[in-house]
Image (cartoon, rainbow, N blue to C red):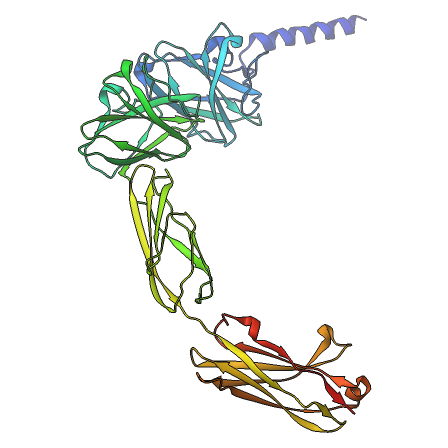
Length: 481
């Protein structure tokens, strides 16, 4: 019993000694591990950088989580003393799974934080800041574990044309400009554009004074809202139009009037781009069908005009080259004689811009016809007899093809092909024809049927026959004995 007591006392003494003597210290969380102990960043000392080991960093109860959950986080706080923005990035960290969440203090404690944005996987985050408001940065790792976080904070000033009074003057057209709108702000009495893209971020301003009355087209980048105003100050501006998602706004500017253009990003976009041009004329264009018209065709003309100003075409004027006209969008016309006709289309937009185009329409009436089909009235099995198809042609020299068929009730379509001939067919008057001569030997099958009916089909090679109805003919049946 005594030996046991002595051993216990020795162990207890050793334990006290290990506490009292210096040795390996137990690691503790970073000093800014908790929200209440956030490292305060002096806005006058930006840019700011800090490096902190996250090995023992923790997460508080009710600590907000946005974009990605972080089980290890540290906190920073900054209260901007002037308008603009700040950008935070994790460059220099020895891990890639970083997460940066930014909050605005709108109430007390963790419950009073309003999420403003985040950057993950090594990406930065930028936030437009209100003067006098405190912003908290929650920085950490997505997957936890050890690692050193390097955080960098820098101020982003507003663009030079941030305020209406400092609107950038556009002196010549075409004009284009791109700016970083991260630091852009909103003035107290600044108008809110009527089109989408809400909630808007800060704005930039441009102005243009028209030297002549003309149509202008303005637009912004894809995630931009662009509004156009007239007036002399923020308190008396009148919006004349608005576009977002890079939509084009076209309007007629009046000589001597100054126009103000308000540009803003939305959905987190801070890249602002503005373009202003004198609106080009409409692009007139058309196609027609058929593409090889004849004097028997009613041609359908299809308007394919477009307006680069995106206002649309308001009126159409057709001139068909033979005295005929139309004001329909898609017109029809028939030419009574062959020839080359210049068709002109003129279009006018809703704001009065005009454009025109013209094409030469070649009207050619190609037409051959089967004028005769000579077959024997009767024949015997084994006999070879002549069959003659006469083709008439009164317009242009043609190359014609003639197919000869004979009846067969069991064949698809009721006919079998006998043969094909192709010949040059000159223009002939006075009822004269070009003859296509076929020969046919009658079979026992023909005899069993008792008769054979011959059919001829003619076509023009390399051209469309204007009247195909007279390109097919059938003879009276030939008796077969």
